[in-house]
Length: 434
Image 1 (cartoon, rainbow, N blue to C red):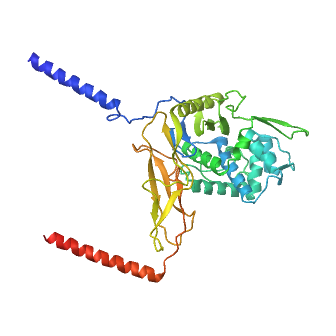
Image 2 (cartoon, rainbow, N blue to C red):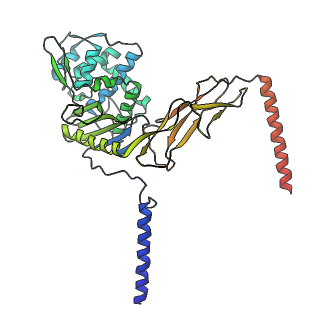
């Protein structure tokens, strides 16, 4: 009996060792690279690499929460888009109306715009981006769309276009709608919310589509009405900028937010050694805490990951050198990535990412430089997650023209293919008979 018990104990010991070994190599009970416990004291958070949109860390990332002044990232996006499209200019002069004047007296962070005061778009944009001025923000919104209500409609439309699925805007500022007098309040129903993931989507597209935003968000301190009567000192609320209270190497943006309901929020971005990170924290307990929690995310991202070029731009990718062409003189066209294809990998990772290629239906005629599909570098071990399905993908472009085939060529090609299929079927039938 005792001998049997000793044998059972021996078997259990062996099984325990085998289980421990399996877990150590990532085979049982955990993934090879489990997400760390950063012990963030926030309601939600996310960390991504900006170029690829790869998610490096997430916590309650899809939870819709009040974003406070992080809302202004969308206002910044739409103002810059309107400038790029020529609808407005930096030098446009904007006259402060009664709503802007009310915000200048009661609207949280503000530059005290006076009724009838005239300021340029550039001045108002600087006040919004650096000092989160609500009065400057509503005047920009009205200048772009005619009214804040119309501007908020544009905000929600753009959010859908960008793939922000847990977002709904009610104001252009993030200032609580309930605190705005009814005569000024946009007639938009629903809660004003945005998830951390959606904030990251918006921040990434803001940086990629309008990189000039960093010229404003990186300013540690500015002066409104400089050299005039009643100047306003505008220290940046982003204390992680150089020379400020919570400075962090590489930080150059992006947007803070605070209301009693939202608590303290921050969408930050920093760049080091060719890698740009974007972080979002929502619901931190204090003004300083939001930056301390952000620093934890940046420390993790910069210490654990790096960006590597996997496939060179304008050079063929082995195994994916061509794409099929329908109705062309040629049946294939040589293709290359439009630019370098990069991947975010763990430092010390030896396995090279694999190409993930998606080719569109290509119909002749094809022009050199035409996009015919996409390519993305992904981990062959799986587990990669991106902000949006298209994040990290680079266009595959044709290297040469392919002319459309004549009807006669297509006719004989079709006839040839039919004959080939017929004889292939006959050979298979005869072979099967024996």
